[in-house]
Amino acid sequence: MGRSFSMCAAPDAAAANPAEPQDELRYVGVFPPHVKTIAFISPGYYPEDVSHRRGIELVEKAGCKIKIMPHAFTVPKEGQRSAPLADRLADFYAAWNDPEVDMIICVRGGWGSRALLANLDWDRLERRPELIFQGFSDITLITSALLAKGYGHPVAGPNAGVMANLRAPFIAEMKAMHNGEAVGPYRLGTLVPGDCSGLPLAGLLDRLCRIAEEGPRPDIEGRIVFIEDVRDTPEEIRAQLRTLLDRKFFDGAAGVVFCSFVQSVTPSEIDAVLAEFAPKAGVPVYCRFPFGHTPECATIDFGRKAVIENGELSFPAVTGD
Image (cartoon, rainbow, N blue to C red; front, side, top):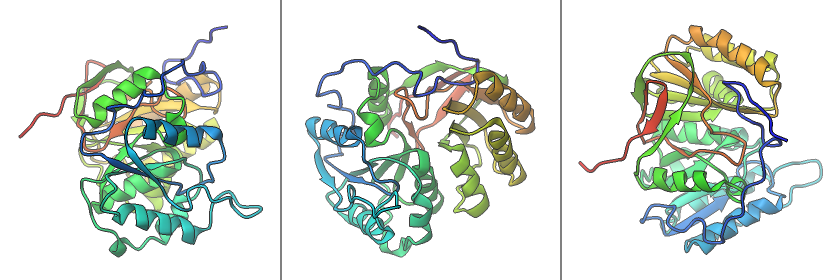
């Protein structure tokens, strides 16, 4: 039976239909031509689900050389959800500094990025502006830190586990995003109207609050902030948005776009919280962009300009200098 959704809230993962059957070579050509070798790391939770290995398998079948870091699938000790911190740090350093690695994809999210960042020695990392680093959810902390410190090429996009069941249109759009092709337009829901444009910053609401409170905090000036959420109550969502306002997180931003709010509460409750927040942001505010914890998860390159005109969001094609 079908289900209707509100203007602002996206369907949750449980409500979404299973990903349609797709061929084994679905990721052929998705990554930029210079990406020959992709490393997989698990900065957060242990990737116990079959989908995590399946996503890696599909990338390998696309013709990429893969390097699964030694501790990516280390089974945690009893009572733990992640491999030991020292092992996760070792994998991060090894993947980042390997000159053969052109891209790093996180196997899954889950708590762990905060501890990793707190103990990360940035002096041990080369800056590598061409190195693509892709992930989302708890990985928000890492992609935002990379942006703040000027390391690598951060991209908010599906982890390996999500890639196993990502729907075909979003695989095509991942390809377009990574290869500089035009993406969109998407028709958005409007909370505060207004045209705007700028480079994006995308992440999980709770982790964006951590960034606002603890840093490292990227420069938001002129950026469009994309926000997703998972499993929060209306009170928690309201408090987190208040934290971002109190910390002046949106000061200088070009706009705000709310994305998928899943496994949380009823869509009408989410709508009410977002409608209450929107006038306080001081910028155009939109919703209903497909990014988050569902098989309909867009890829957002922090270096690709986003444009919102007349309630439609697009990423124009990248042209040469």
